[in-house]
Image (cartoon, rainbow, N blue to C red; front, side):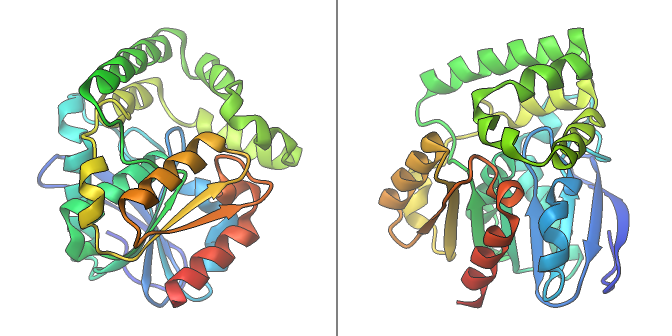
Length: 280
């Protein structure tokens, strides 16, 4: 794994449990803060906030299975959300980075919540950006698995370029169309560096339908938790409010004029909210 250094360092560590070789990049000094990206992303997805956060924190970015420089194993059963949660908790322990401030976005938020519930010793504070506890019923999960399997098959058959074009047309990203052209091109280039095999495996193993539901576990979560959503993302803002109703100890921050990815759309405001929460 990466060795603590105020300058950027990186390393690859293979999990003895799953055999997954995780790519980790680390920069800054101070208390450890771990960033977990969303589907189609990588550690590079946090570029707009890493420099600001690393002025005062030891920022650790991890490429999740099937993304960036972390390949997915041939068998999706080896990279399910509970197994990856165990891998991340073990890697942080090996780094001497537990408990850590844990920040997850979308898929990474679902994973971060899983780590906090399954391995609470590893987490000091929990910040979930546009996250969810999964789907509440098996019928919902089965329907979502069918949709994710269809998408995974299309990715494998049509290739990464066709998939990214389809992905970027989703209404979920409407607010990102206002971003500067250079930012959108950088985001697109990062998505294109993923592989069809990796993204398909991620959908099958860590998609919303594949993961266990954590809705009934929320009341027992005792780790200080901040939910961040964008005001333009009505779906995930409603999910956050429902999560807070299950676990009143959670705080919820809505960032104005942002959609599903406030860290990308309003990075300065996102960093401000994260730092204020950690300081409390």
